Length: 154
Image (cartoon, rainbow, N blue to C red; front, side, top):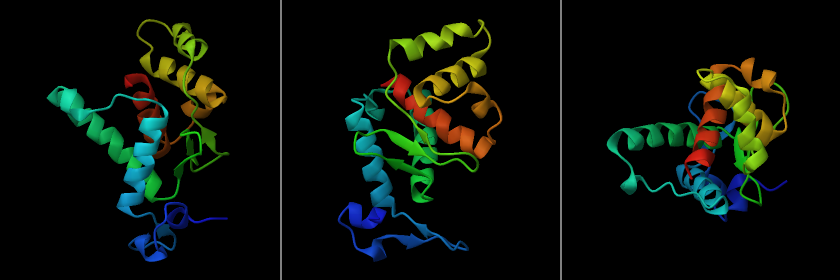
């Protein structure tokens, strides 16, 4: 298996040891590269220059969640640019580009059930049951939410 550093043509010393952890931490440059690969592969328009200040702040927060998960080794971007997230429990989740059918899943939620609509969309694009997201700890859910927000904004 190729390490993240090797996959990106970096030296192993570019992958830093996380403070107090036994697992290697992915370097900032590698995490940024993975984010860029995701954005380009999914043809997302996420230029902060064209965002309001409020939208830019939200974008930066979601990007921190994405990059943090990459740095922890819990999120990768596959050869097709699809994010693959390993939550703290259960198998990996592959986030596919949403299609019309996936977007229509949100219609199953009632008017003020925004979280339910989000879980329905996440379920559709990962081919997982909505209950998986309802039971997911917040530290995992915020990464999943960030990915979906990017897919919806672009």
